Image 1: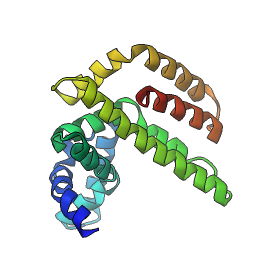
Image 2 (image 1 turned 90 degrees about the vertical axis):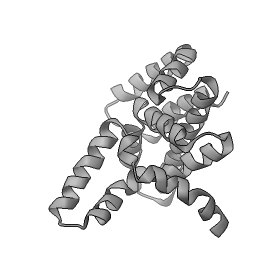
Image 3 (image 1 turned 135 degrees about the horizontal axis):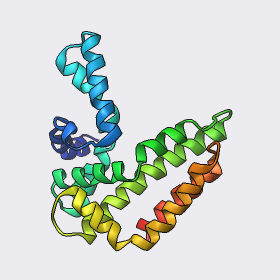
Image 4 (image 1 turned 60 degrees about the vertical axis):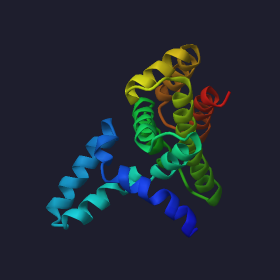
Amino acid sequence: MAEVVAQYKPQIDLIRANLGDYVQGGDLKRLHSMLVKSHEWGLPEDLGHRWTELFEAFALLDVAKIAAQEDAPMTDVAGVYYAAYDRFGVDNLLERITALPRKDRWQALARAALRDDLYSTVADMTVAVLAATDAGGAEERVLAWEALNAEKLARARSVFEEVNALGQDDMASLSVALRLLRSIVRQ
């Protein structure tokens, strides 16, 4: 365990210290609003920053693993990961999964499995973007990857529109939507 921590900690600390440079959209807004809240509560600056970053930093283990696996700079991987995360509305999907019922053990396990699958899909998408595109800005690389997969992504967007049109989310609809997104990156 200590060996794994020693391998990834410096890289994760590097990105975590500048997480606001990588997260985008609603995630960045949440980061800023939580930082304001930490100031209102009178938290010490370092503790306030650490608290605001906890949720967003969860993905850094995946980012570090991808960087090591692909022998790519951690900063490039983090940029692509968070650009894809924002572009494909992962935060919205996570919130919708979290809102699913958990009346019994099986529902709770199914929700956890969906969340795990979603994080795994973003990691796979990041690897696919890195492999299919040349160096450049993270947003540019994600857009270039989208262009290469336009037909498959159009089908996925169609299914997502159907799922969004439903009055209420359920395990089945979100599972199908996530499965379709996964199929694009796991060919």
